[in-house]
Length: 189
Ligand SMILES: CC(C)(COP(=O)(O)OP(=O)(O)OC[C@H]1O[C@@H](n2cnc3c(N)ncnc32)[C@H](O)[C@@H]1OP(=O)(O)O)[C@@H](O)C(=O)NCCC(=O)NCCS
View 1: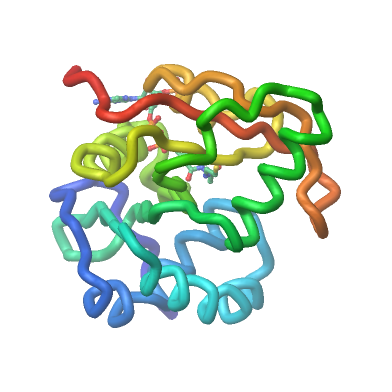
View 2: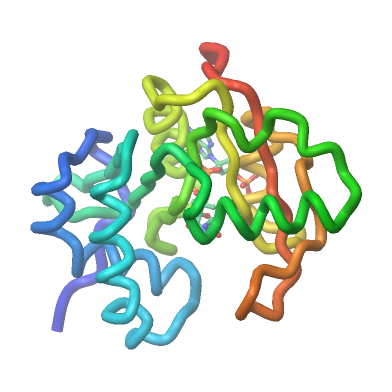
C-alpha cells in the first residue's frame, strides 16, 4: 500500500515532458483523488495527458513534498483551432450570443490544476497557478471549471479571472461549467 503524500509543500518546480512522463501515474493519481473520480479514470486519461505534452507552449508545474512526492500538478498549452476544448468554447460563445472578441486568439489554456486533498487549503494551488502563468505563452489565459462555490472558484477569482461563458455544457458532461479568463501576464503579488 502506498502511503498518503505528506501535505507540506517543500518546493515548486517546472517539469519537462520527460519528467512528467516518468511521474505520470503519480500525477494522474492526484488528479483522480482531487476530482473524486473513480481510479479507472487515471488510466483512461493517460493517453490524453501524453498527447497534450506535445502541444505548442506546453508548460507544467509540480509541487513536491520533503520526501519528493508529488502533491500538486498544473499544466496547460497554447489553445488553437481544431482542438476539442477550443471548438467547444467557440461553439458555446457563438450560441450564447456573447461577444467572442479576441478571447480565442493567442491564449494559454489552463488544462489541469489539482492538489492532493491532504495538501489543499494551504496556498499550494495558488503557488502552482502563479508559477504556471508566469512565463506562460499567450496574451491571455482561459480555463473551464464546474459551476459552484468551490475552492477552485475562490482561487480563480482571487487571481483575477473574470467570466467568459457561464453555465455551459461541454459535450459528454452533464455538469454546467464556467469558462473564465484573464489577460497575461499576471501582476506580481
Ligand atoms: C482548486 C485547487 C487546485 C486549489 O488548490 P489549494 O491548494 O487547495 O487552494 P489554494 O492555493 O487556493 O489555497 C488557498 C486556501 O488556503 C489558505 N491558505 C493557507 N495558507 C496560505 C498561504 N500561505 N497562501 C495562500 N493561501 C493560504 C487560504 O486561506 C485559502 O483558503 P480558502 O480556499 O478556504 O479560502 C484544489 O483545491 C483542488 O485540487 N481541488 C480539486 C480539484 C479541482 O477542482 N481542480 C480545479 C479544476 S478546474
